[in-house]
Length: 289
Image 1 (cartoon, rainbow, N blue to C red):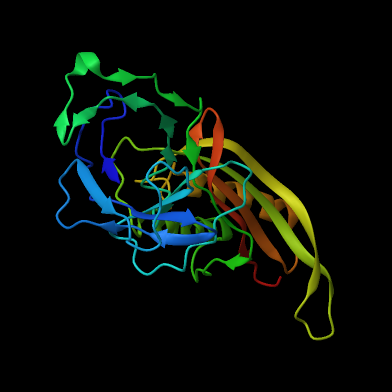
Image 2: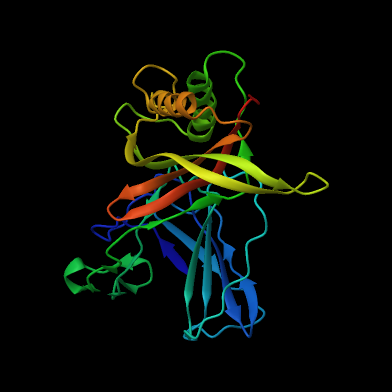
């Protein structure tokens, strides 16, 4: 089997900026059989050998699994089993170890090419190569990460509540956005943020479970988040504005013990809105008053 790297717009051979040849396996009689990548692939072509056993007929339509693992992925869990399908010979493409912030969207397309190589490895003259137009979905695909377990933001020892919340929320966003990524001065991330006040109405006897009530405090339905500055607790930043709003509410309501809870969603694109990272339950525990 030959796998070529081509430019998406011209379908002509072009090197991939990332050294990313896949692991390939074919399903034969309900068993996944790995193919062997030949040594020293070129920048635009990799060749895979089928095993001697079991013998797989060349023209037999079979399911194939292509697994692309990013070089900086680190240690990964075993891949999930392939889903069941009624399609005779599905082609599965898995992208493992990707960072949803660095690689937010992907576009998949298909084109049929015939007569590209008629004599061994000699390319056919372009006038005699048959190609269909690339068929793809209208919208890009986006990976999505969702965290639903409660996360407690670090409590800051100084400043009023608004300042402490701006610093705690900003530190969380800085760690999430910058731990593996570098952002340019013009980069933006669409974000939606809901803030509420939560307090326990009943607590179990072992004090491990509580029945909480949630009171809405504010909603920022859409904001163009600036990764270079909006996490900083400076005047005019996103987290500073959120902290000021919470401080105003806190002074007016004077709530007793409880927590300020944040539900933040970052999006890969604005049209259509595709969730990229959803932190569903971030909590800042209030001091008892």
